[in-house]
Image (cartoon, rainbow, N blue to C red; front, side):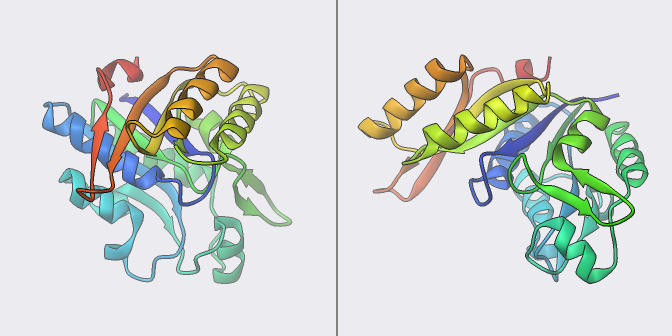
Length: 225
């Protein structure tokens, strides 16, 4: 079975997919056999516009889309609501089998969540599945993606404390849209580390003048240990 990391975030549109793609690309470029999986994906009427396709293209992954994603919903809602509207609720057995099958092909896996950590994946009269249930069923440690900007101390600390209350293992935090020399971003990083006791595992460094980003993370493979 592959060594794996689950990528969650402090909220929606913080950069989970972008960071997942950066990690996959860096690992593959360094010669590691890495794959990607996402249980449920919302807001995609065309798979080539989906999060998973972005990761596949960015990191040049060879797996087929249907190996990488178990449930794709057209509505850009939380998966539980999209599933209710489209009549295709998630099944934990399907998710576990799909993850097991794709992880057999790789030495390392990135598993991306949906939304933030408190995200309902299925919520109906028959079953209630939250993101944390998938993390526990797959028995995976997590990386948290947080924005570097205003408000991130609160959202990052709350995410960490919730995950700790659920006994979910946290391997580190990656700050997205981080600007070197930005006094607030630098202080946010320091405060998050001091309050949570969790080290920053990586930075997506944003250069607004050059309109480019650089991914800084030392020894990514060690996070999978």
